[in-house]
Image 1: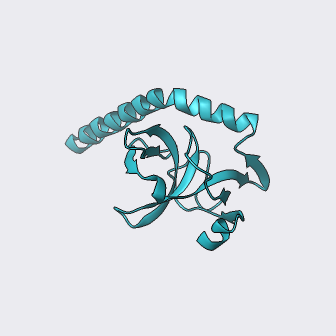
Image 2: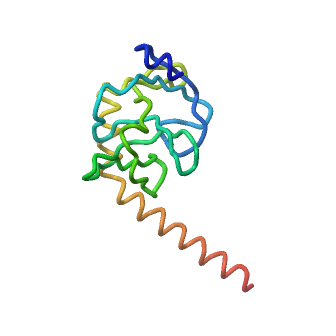
Image 3: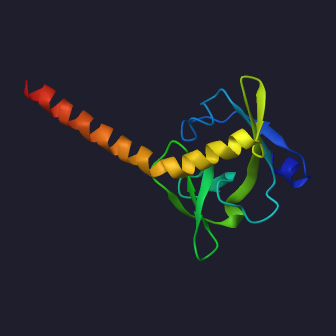
Length: 145
């Protein structure tokens, strides 16, 4: 894959995992990658190598650090990843296929999705924490009888 990207070709594959839901569904949607041509921008979706877990990841750029590294986050995650260095970035997502239809990252509907995701994230995280806390309370009450 790296050789094809280095030669300017695009690469596609079907990612596994739920961290990029609702954009990418586990084992169903296909992503198109190209080698990054420089600094990533806010909301870019990058394919990178995570040294701590020795794994490859597709997550979104949600911030930048003073040392030039990125802050990454899956659309379905709440825990940010810090210190993702530019040399860890292998490629960026240029499009994805869902149900046979191509969605380019330059499409208006995709840009709107990114904007809504960005502004909705704090409310979504509050909802998730509240729902998780309520589930723990209900579970405790059910154990007591």
